[in-house]
Length: 377
Image (cartoon, rainbow, N blue to C red; front, side, top):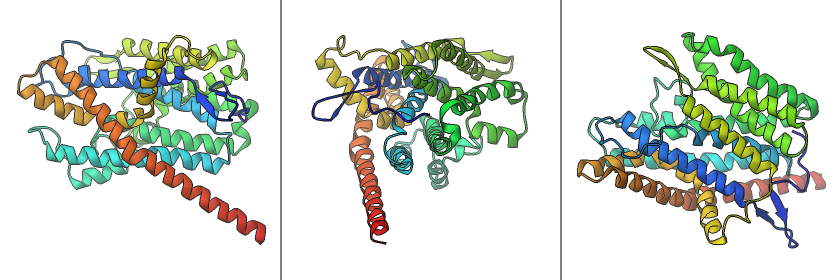
């Protein structure tokens, strides 16, 4: 992770010194979150709750959340060289953790207030275990309040690992290439052990640190390296193919009939990796996205993390209530999408942005005081 140059492929400078975000990234991020919502509302909803009326339109591919991890890794590379390393890490924590805490509390309260008979009814101990993300280590013992939250600890660990690497020689130059190859090849090598009924300790550690998803972070970093001309096209393609192989192995599921591959989701994620690469390397899409649409896409992209955190479980409750009174499944799906968007907007306005601003201002104030004491001392 060589230091990011002042002019990056993700921003163009205005004469005023302000940066203009590429609309292409907002389009990709928005598309990923919408795909997550469609997967949850049209497929996973009735899979988890088969008593509900089957959906008339189904999107059965698990793709959006995986690509969001790829994008997170890419932008970690873009931003990690700006300012101090500690401020970078603190900024990531300040952006991710408060909305997550707020979402867990909101979902918990809704699940208890609008409880559905026969569905999971969370207790206070469930609230605590979800706030501590214990399901990341033992999902069989600690139930998700909202299944979408599985990405949060992986992002927290990913940003922390990026900061730790960047602080050493292993986060720069040729050494980071070695780290990336190890991170994608080691999970592939250990895959037979992972699917052969390993010990609980092994499963807890390996799954807890997300070994089977490391390729998603690797491909995000590789895209940045290639888009900034730090690795050649053949090298990038080799790493991309290795990451695609890692995704294919990840999408094998254990069933009574043995291991079954989800090739639909695998192909969708692999195609998404190519889209992210083209977005990073190529020009902005502002010439093909009209201004009236660009504004709406950018608005949704700005609240996408909040939408991601609160749409699933609450959306299922909304759909079940509507299903009980005979509402058409297509309208149920629309209701889940709308509910998730409204709640995500509220979480962004009330929690995410104010908390991030407060935490960053607090950090900057304390840092300025430390600097002043150092000068006077």
